[in-house]
Image (cartoon, rainbow, N blue to C red; front, side, top):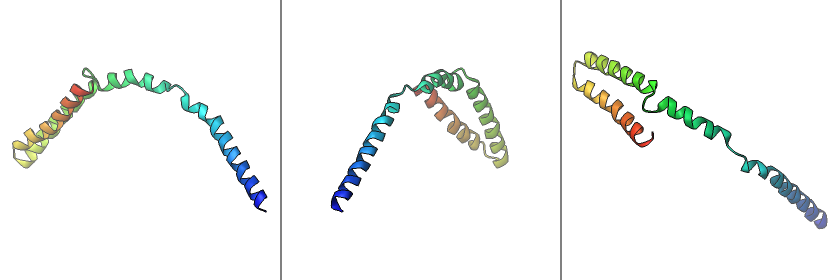
Length: 95
């Protein structure tokens, strides 16, 4: 009985090792999508993209609406700073 258990364990280990050996070749595949997205991301979020123009315009509209609603002009400064500082840092250090 002990010999049968050892034989079964050896067969299972061998099958696992063979499966790992056969599947490991896919780990070295080239990532084609990473090179394709590099230009697309830079075009979408780069310094001259339409995204930043729309983002800043929406931010100004929302900051104005919040300043009018709260009757406190400092809200405009705060909301604008919250939007412009991350946008500036992202454009400076990423792109």
